[in-house]
Length: 427
Ligand SMILES: *Cc1c(COP(=O)(O)O)cnc(C)c1O
Image 1 (cartoon, rainbow, N blue to C red):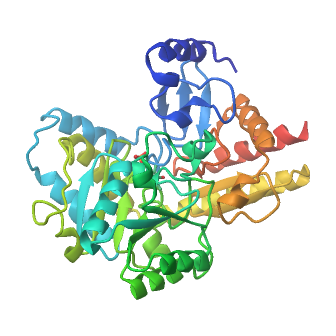
Image 2: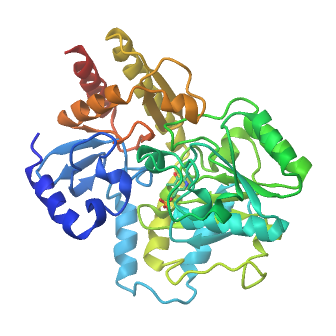
Image 3: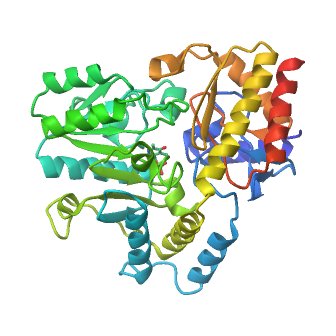
């Protein structure tokens, strides 16, 4: 494959955009080489500026769960755009998507829309602090909750990839209120709570971690967190920016049968437009301005185009009883196929998978937390990434990222992916 035009466009971008990208993981730093510029996409495929067709396993890092340029979303956006693109005043469609989201997700009464997952998590933590009157939060090493200051402490994917787990610009004052725990380690969390008794507002977690590769919660881990929160007056925040409207209609809360106190959304909820949201039961949500004292706002929040895209996406997912089962089956098929060819070619590996999230770690030990995720062979991953790409399969450009399976992928696409993986390692 040729990347002549992509390389030229990247060189041009670097002159005016730091690193040539508007979000660091796009820059290919973890795998080397220069990023591919996308011209357009449809269904399961990306078409780059050099005319190559790629099977896409990133899907805009999650949102395009049904594939690119999904017709109901595209036409909803076009129709809305003709009627004005932003008013800074309430519109009916905001209530419609809110009603639908509240009906799909367990345990929430009210939801507020923002513009990104970062904003959703940042606002959820402020709300938890306002509600409990406490300052400290517990987050898990390797979990990513967006790039706001409190979270840039061992933050998974982008931050880990670039070796700046603690970004300059985050003050010590902010960092001291964020306590770090090991994923899947309940006793570690219990110790932190004991050492900071009555100071912790919330525990925030990716209920299935997706930003250090895919890591499922161990049996009893989420329930254990729920119990610790109940016993200590701490709010449990599920960051479902990745898992929400992906694992099931109701996300990880539904999949594992655990109630969170506050839930954060992003990615799928916007159908590919910039949308985030946070939701909780009424008692908590009523603390937000204008009803309560916790301030949170946004000029473009609830933007009509974004809401139209999100509503079309959620409506489709809500009406299709089989979509999440279908996605999980496709992902399981991919898992089995990849395992088989990797084993056949004597490649040391572990594959983690939950629903339509899957990641390949090049290490044989079980991957259960940030430490075990970091042990994977990054050199093997780099070669794997570039060799897959050369044959038309685009996986995440970092070993710390989950792949996202979209419903637009056919079994033929999956077979091709498995064949390419075989050819990469059999040569
Ligand atoms: C992507 C992601 C975020 C941040 O969302 P942005 O829209 O990129 O700001 C937060 N939490 C999780 C779990 C994510 O995967």
